Amino acid sequence: MSLMKQQGAILALLAVLCAADAAALSSRFAASQQLALQDSEPLCGSCTWLVKSMKCELSDIDTQDEIVRTILKEVCPKLPNEVQDICDQLAPQLIPIGVMYLQSISSKELCADAALCGTAAAPKVNSLAQQDDFNCPMCKMVLIAIKQELRNPDSETALIDQAHEACAKLPTDWQAPCLAYVDQLGDQVFEYIDNMDPSTICMNFGACPPVMRTHLTVPPLPPVLVAKAAELRMHAHALSAENDFCDTCKMVVVEAASILGNLDTQKQILEYAKEACSGLGPNFKDQCLNYVELYGPLVVNMIVQYLKPELCIDAGYCPKVVPSSLYDMYVS
Image (cartoon, rainbow, N blue to C red; front, side):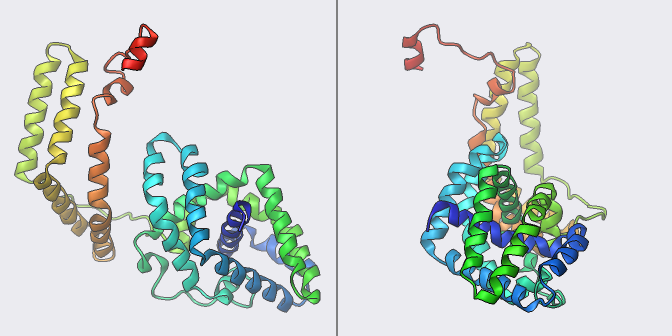
């Protein structure tokens, strides 16, 4: 399966998902659907056939691996610097989970949600957010990747061409409605995806929990962590009194990395985070605890790796060292 076809599989399937939530697009969608075909049965059949084909392609392990490689090569480097490392670490874990979720939904359910096959079924109790704790970051990452990819005119043209090729493989009676659907709604779907807010869409899909507006009670820091923070502040204050902000920054970074690198300290931080989950209320406490278990150690280790003395140069506290010769450049 070619790289563009693999991207097309994901983009086409996500386009169907996004259509299910496109309230602003619904009126135009209904009008275009009537122009495409008075009888919705062929259009429903086209949608279910397309979704089944996409699910079949995505079930191939080689296809999933190629998608991960594409994200690592083409998507993560284009993201803001502060999230590139997170993208590199999460992509190999989240893509298979996303495929598993898509495989768990029937083709008719997806097409019904997109208003192509009758009336959408009522929301199930086991929502996407409850099915897997990876879904929220996975959903946002995929939608951001899709938005960036669709800003390339060549990608949009290639996807339209692939959709036309897919229509040509349908039974004769379905080909014309399928082509009409692609031509009339293709640009609208691309425009909708480009304008959508990933956080809002993922929340509406159930991949991310709704925004809370309740009062959050934060527990006090454990005495051990308070003592370590106070000691770190005292050392920093002593150096800053000498106006040596570069050394102060380096000391703080090294000490912070040492504190966070201690396994006992990490355990205390995670326990503190779990206590904070209690302040979220019964509706979110369990999910918060799951997030701490899943992401807590990863986040702490990422922070430790990030805390290097070179950080003080990037922050502007230390001057950037410019090599005076090619020899110094190679030695450094």
